[in-house]
Length: 156
Length: 463
Image 1 (tube, rainbow over the protein chains, first blue to last red):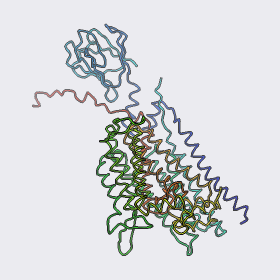
Image 2 (cartoon, rainbow over the protein chains, first blue to last red):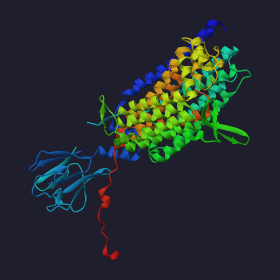
Image 3 (cartoon, rainbow over the protein chains, first blue to last red):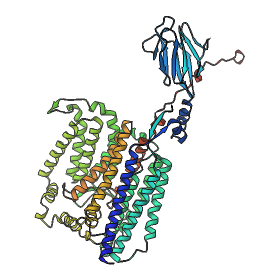
Image 4 (cartoon, each protein chain N blue to C red):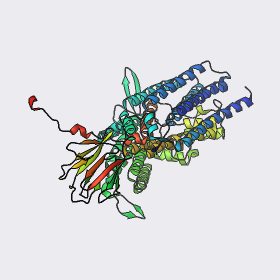
């Protein structure tokens, strides 16, 4: 082989080596920002845990707000999702300053695909759609809840 | 409005393309070596390509199945380094008379290392299981580290007692237990520091604006210091000693965020190394070879010839097969970097160092990205092992530091090192997979249905 070819091949190899590094750098660059997708797409793409996939899909149809349209604290809104306890005590997630409400009155928690309200042995009772509940009851969008003098509705 | 989340792309396709590119570069190196040395294209090049692509396909498929979100860049870079190493060992084989066949052996070890990689991916679905036995793993790691000091199985080679030899059926198999100790101790340190980081981070007194840890928290760092001194004194190996002490100090810093620890670590190590220099001949010889190599040509032959080789290579090197890297003793192991410097020049050596830098950066990126402390420390620790090793050995060959007997990860000849480094890559990839998985999927927790607690009504008739 001629000298020129040898030098050409040598430089060509080094160029290929640096090209590999440039490709890598390019891949790093496009990797920095990630990709924005909606939660439903994420669910469709499928995470590693099939349970979570279902949970995310179901979560989209669930109410995410508890609003008080009537009562002493009308206009108050709390987020749903993590379990909330409603009562007069300061450690409740939703505090109702109302003599007709027990210290820990009721609990709303999220089960697999729906929300559940449960009376915690209150004196004056918890009403879902004007019916006093005795067992944990499934609630959904549009249901109204009455505790003491307050009425609450589930909204999205 | 729909909720938006930011996720990493899986990028397995990018990984496949980069891996193909790595394999092609390595096969090109193989062909160039023969073109330059024998003036003909080697008969076996389809075999080289086939083996490279075969290994790439195996690794790619297992990662795609087991760790779909793993970092896409780590594997191609490891492939490139491993392949370049095999190519250079092959080139050094051809330079000897009679021709040796250590590149074939290295290829076999690469196969074994890939098998170990696959096994780790299959049997380690979640790195959390490694968090269980910090103290037991620490003892095991320490035992492995100090094992070559045991009489009978410990062997001294090239002035360092870091080998153990087992004689089975007349032939002796030797390996470096420190390579295995690297993995075990990284896991042990990570698990230990997750448990103790809050205590160790407690503020002590301030000296010159730097918080010095409380005296009672200095136990762990002093213990590691003594262990590293024992390695330095009895195994005569500065590199291994520096690697393990440096690793522990860096992980301590990552866990606590206390700048006092690395500062203290530097002083402790400098003090220990200086005492070693005063009292031990082998340390003095290393320092002399570093500062004044040309004073004694015969003793410092290796360092000097390595330097000459790199100088001969210049900016773009002599080209594959056209230098004389065989003149350097241990060119396939400790001085493989000098061989690359000679035949690929500064341009090639800088590329190789950059590849290591990207590899380490990707590991640290995963450490930043992951939410949970054990994964953070594990990824950071594994990256540091690579970083310290590369820094120490390339620094030693280029005379930035005194020369130490550490292996160059993935490049240098040697089975135990190759297998250990591939296993570390596998663990690192498992961590990156968890670091890059979409957040929403990970954070959602199971909520038990209250309906399951409903009181059962049992009819009287049933009683």
